[in-house]
Length: 114
Length: 115
Image (cartoon, rainbow over all chains, first blue to last red):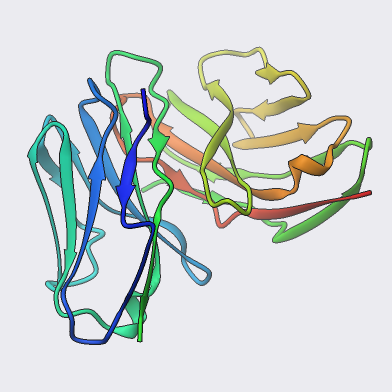
């Protein structure tokens, strides 16, 4: 298996622009998590899905952030409009409830908003 | 809510020596999982070791072992025979037993292995 695939790996955008981050979980996994990593706050959960249904989005900073999981093999995290304080590394991870419980992480997307 | 605390922001160790990274956590759950993840400069999050709270025996994976003290809510990681490739950020993480629930991470410890 190719693992969790995130795209793009790097994104530089101007303040006010819309940014879409993409994630393909491991085939067969039924949970998907979006995390954000910054120096100040470390790794924090933004939102997670079980069986494509959002379970907890309390970590989403504000209405500018939205996430979707239209099917079991794809998820997006959108920021509109983007702000410099959104600059961070965004990780997607997936896991399978019937397995080892281990969460497998993608390579992350480094977002820079200028 | 669960919290995870790593009190050592940075540590260093000589190659071939042993180092211990500390982690404490707070939870009202009676059963749960604890993890150590490694994040090298490549940014990839790599699972190092996992402990189920109901198990009294400490988990080991080759050069990596943990000291799990459930009553004290402590979960330290020991790296033996440190290698240059062990240089990375190390994150302690908590997960509820229910499974398919999010990881709660500590702030991390930056470990440097010195030749």
